[in-house]
Image (cartoon, rainbow, N blue to C red; front, side, top):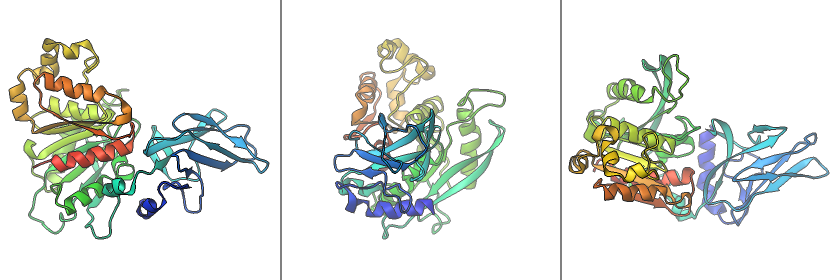
Length: 377
């Protein structure tokens, strides 16, 4: 019901853009937060006994209290897109009770959407005349982690109608502090693919979304089981449970931020499984080896990465159909530098920059939109 309500709100959102209006993610009957015409956000909460409250939203803003115990604050203008936020009192950060919550910041948090132009938002808004795929919550046993886990799996609208057809698969990872729900509730991955497939701009595909937090038994490392889990548990399970085309030419991996690192690690460390890879707002990194480390520009160190996967650019470019690097314009030049360094070392790759956006979900929705159009062609 929560997601259905959000979609109804989002469908009406273009009518509200550029004028002061309640946030798309407010609970029914909640007037605040308000998105203002200049993209600032006004927040309000009634807490007569509180001594002080601060808003943590793109910066920290002390709230002021009126004679009725109502606290308010207005932020500076924010870039368009999805922004997590918290309220703070007595040293405790908590979600605003007036809003829906999303798993981010390593906990459930409030969020606001600073709306973009209606025409630009069209690609992730659901439409009544577009066939909708299904999103399944799937439990599976992980030998790597020695626990039952959950993944979300998107199948295209035609999946049930074509019982003999098999589909390519995109493994899609969230960022740090988020989980397997992110690409559905914050990223609208299913809606983006529904719209693209309906227009013939993307191949019908399965999307698999897992939590990137995976720990080996007895370990305290939050990520040390991830690759083992994906290769030994997840991919075999998906290929058995769903009608996949189970080869590397029809298998892609992508992720955002920390999930971008995981995507590059999976693709370059296990090229026998993947031939399409994208990092959204994330870099190729091995320890201290990254685009701003001098070693990244050293031909010998570059060639030695991932057991020499970059040593023979001709072979690499034949093995990988697409390496796709993306970023938000407000994030700076790091990903563009990586793109150019890869090209300088003979590694073919493509680059996309999301106009005006930052390290947040609008950048990543746009990145998925661009990447999905290129996949499995």
